[in-house]
Length: 288
Image 1 (cartoon, rainbow, N blue to C red):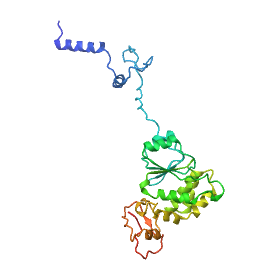
Image 2 (image 1 turned 180 degrees about the horizontal axis):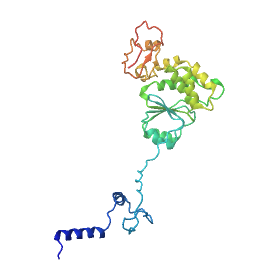
Image 3 (image 1 turned 90 degrees about the horizontal axis):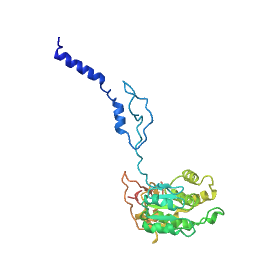
Image 4 (image 1 turned 90 degrees about the vertical axis):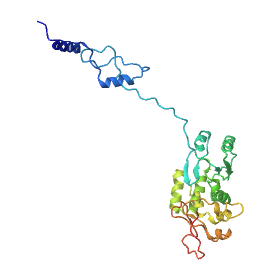
């Protein structure tokens, strides 16, 4: 007696299902798709199909993505740091630092070393259209009067002219001579001596010098302001926008300024006229 056609069809389908290959698990399909054929395939795989050993080894891991090409490192000079807006400090720049220095978009390099500047550094300045200023100071060990006050005064006058910014100050190590000059900048910014000396010691450690700190403490800031308003100075109109930049009233009178521009509440810079003393002439404590 013949079987019904429906049962016969169902029987053949069931038989075909048992004899066909087992389906590949989804996670193995993903591994096979992402496998890099250039990488060696593992010799054996513990993963096997449900109905018997696999015919070929299967990769068991996903290779890491190729690393992107890394550009040449940007190496800052020794003891590099930001002093304030538009001013940096460091040790003596070397060739390996030039690429990093290009990112600063410098307008001026101010060196405190006495020796002749290296040709490679001068050529770099020329290629980057960076002006070079040299205010040579001898290594300030002993005695105290080895730190030339007039050189520090002229260097500060150049730093207080925002037309020279961005500017990099450096000596050999970026510690003592640079530390003295930065300490005087902090005095102009009305920092407390405690904060000034703490910053100096952070950079000069472990060879902090009492002579440097004494110089910073006793330095006469009036010499700087006299030079700022002199014909060779930048004038009050070119002062940088630094917080708490103190401008003596004598300098304002010397340039014939009756009133300083008022400072908006959001302004970055503020100049104080003669500290907390009363201002009978109605001068505004600030620069725009």
